Length: 409
Image 1 (tube, rainbow, N blue to C red):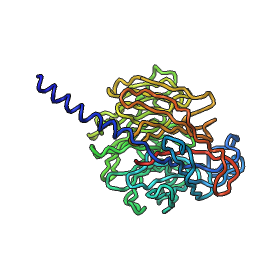
Image 2: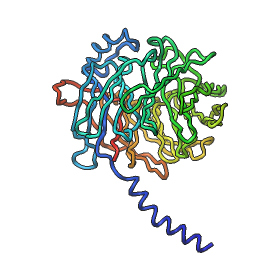
Image 3: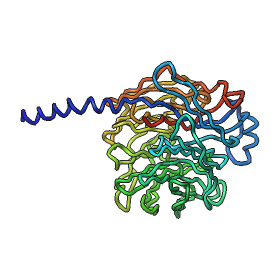
Image 4: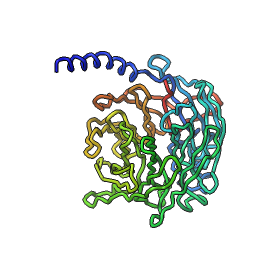
């Protein structure tokens, strides 16, 4: 026994410093997908293509653009080092949730049905390498995930036109060519609108959520696909929870894979939390495991054994211990200002920083927090990046950030 303990102690002594060093390497840059907006807090109609002229006029929109900021700790923090404007803005929205290993970032203008693809190999000189709209019958892509084979998988909300019918998935190779597509339509479920996705290579699975960006209908499902050929395996109904005041089993949002590489948690925009059971088989199901206690929850990130969630209605960022996925519990919380409504979270790849964007007072700034990877403790930082500034392309006005990712170390 003593020999075993000594061996473990040696491993810990050797391994922990290496892990600590690996987990604390700061990212040099922050990539921000944003749109020029002179009146970011204006009330404008939402959200159909017919509303685009009124949105552009009311918000005073200019271009969608990718900005690159220096976020190294120290005096250079927050310095704008690059700005690449692209097309006319309607609604700059999601990017990849982290910078892909190939340094190629997808970014969409959702309402405009346009997606831009950026090469970030030279971070201070980003390049637009291609753009696209609909792919065949599929339109209005929402979320993008890099695949182990170097391709990118995207969810598309609709097929046959704006909010006409359920969309599906499209896989792009590294040159932007469409490898395959798959339809999400399922009998008995008319309101499917593919929103986000999580890939589970270990089990050859993809889990997609279902929620309509324009809120025209409510969905009560999530879907499981085979990753290798995009065959739809099952459309899973979110089991209703009749003892909750709000319908937490509605509009699944951002599925995430836990660190074991095989467990998937599926949150809902109404702050329910579900775990996928029997994911490797042919008959997966969803089990309700938590109600976060808020009314609106948005983009989460997985940090070790913790799920960190943007609890928008609570003006909060919440850390849940999910080491036992069937019994999650809150371990830490930070409160933002009452006029700040968090939406987007991104984690520093090998560090402990989080970046936060959203709505209200977050319409024109990015905030930062740190998370302790061992305990889940959250700490709000004083640093911010202000998007009400002078821009190098001559834009005179503010800008609204949305999808934001840290650079790879």
